[in-house]
Length: 467
Ligand code: BG6
Image (cartoon, rainbow, N blue to C red):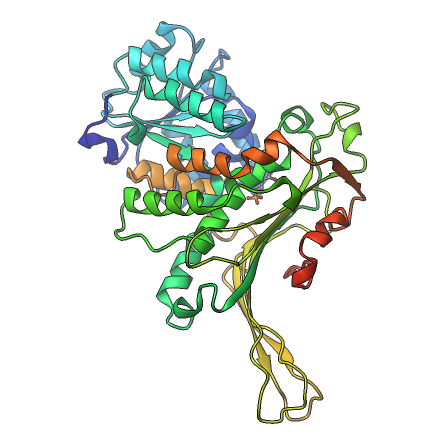
């Protein structure tokens, strides 16, 4: 219902429900400020929340949030941002709240509603917006979690679809806004050096590693019912797998890209619980909000298989965890061994080629080639590195990228319900029959059982770290 050609038009107002909340404090104000700084905002912004705040209180919160992230703040940029912001308050369950929102929106015709609210309020807000006659040309940005398993994800979607059309929904997976992720398909398909070898004939296995040195800290209440698999594997890391493995879209529109993403996700074989390792760092149970006998995983490692002609027989190893040795996200594509050389180079087999795409904390690409120096005893790996961003914060943050995309009217940076369903289907067996959780020491690379998972392929590599 409600979708028209106007759905993809440039947005002429951004309405943020939950502007007084934690996500806004940590991410939203800062991203909007950076967009303002780069001259990329051109519409009014309306913040909405339950609290009866004045505009000054909103400005104070915005200032604190931005300086906490950015250090110094440019007063002229901040003033421009505040000029475009207004505030409306009220209970999300009451129709008069949406009358206030309508008034604050002026005569805007193509609104973007951003729901920074718990998922159990999504439908309430969308229905409130629709009840005030504001949903027709609108788009709604919603934040994970989209359910806690396949059945609940479908139920949430059905509820939303009873009020708005799927084309109006923009589901955030902030990895789709990460500089580096979209570059992976480009790198694969735009380089004649890579495109022909990107398959089972040349690639031995793929490793995707998202390690974090920090713990759950003040997020115990959120994290304990969720765990690593639901927090980052079913969404962010699955999108990394898609970028590495999907076929090229036929056209540059949202539906072609979405189709390719969903196709690939449907070709991933539901993961066998025997190929899944769960870990929990020592000290996790002392975190505020975590149950004293919690068996939630703060570490997950698993092996994926993709059932299609390109990837048959190529394992994708994934690992993620908190309180590990370093903070680093990377994809490592490990190529097959070269055949033994017939021309008498000092005996040893050449080391295998690798292509590493670093996604965090900064973005870069490394190609490792086997090289033999005349004066060296054995062949070595020569590493060719391109660092696209030298320091964290230099590139646009994922939320800047996502806001910009949503305001422009496009939808390619967002996940569709089909992809969400397919992601849950991949891990549903792991949710149904989770293996026992294994303790690990903070500052390590996780439980030793995770090493066994990848033993036959040379073990987990030392990630590409700075320095
Ligand atoms: C979030 C998770 O979605 O992603 C966090 O809830 C995780 O637990 C974060 O730390 C990681 O994002 P990034 O961009 O820092 O890799």
